Amino acid sequence: MFERIIMRISYKRLLNYLTDNLGYSETRAKRTISALRKIDSCILEAFLKWFYTAKFPEEALYGINVKALCDKRSLDPVTAFLTVDWVAREPQAAKKALSTGHDTLILRDEDAGYIEKIMNCNGWELNKDKLETAEDKSDLAVVGKQEDIES
Image (spheres, helix red, strand yellow):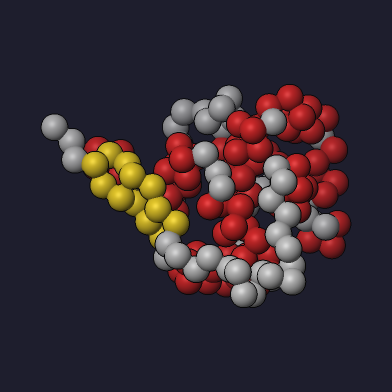
């Protein structure tokens, strides 16, 4: 029998990864972490597995191949997982945007950023005045199966 485990990542480690490795501004990193807190639990589990193993899910999530989003759309992995969540929440609007190719025009930070579109489409807009004081600095966590981590 397989044991259930809690997979988690600390707020600080994720913030540092986003800013240091992916070049996010601190504000964008904080908003991204806030968005990650709201994603579907199976997507969060897949994200955490990817974070610790660098292995993308072999099976599509909500009909979307996360690795293909990174390879073919030049999305960073974090944005790719958030895109999958957008597809889960608003499948028709998200799939239409992904199939038209227009999303490639907003991938650069100077064009307001793809992450901004995803967050706004999902109602994840943060009150920027409260960002510093109301920020949740707890770990991101999800309960998973031991077998999933070891594979």
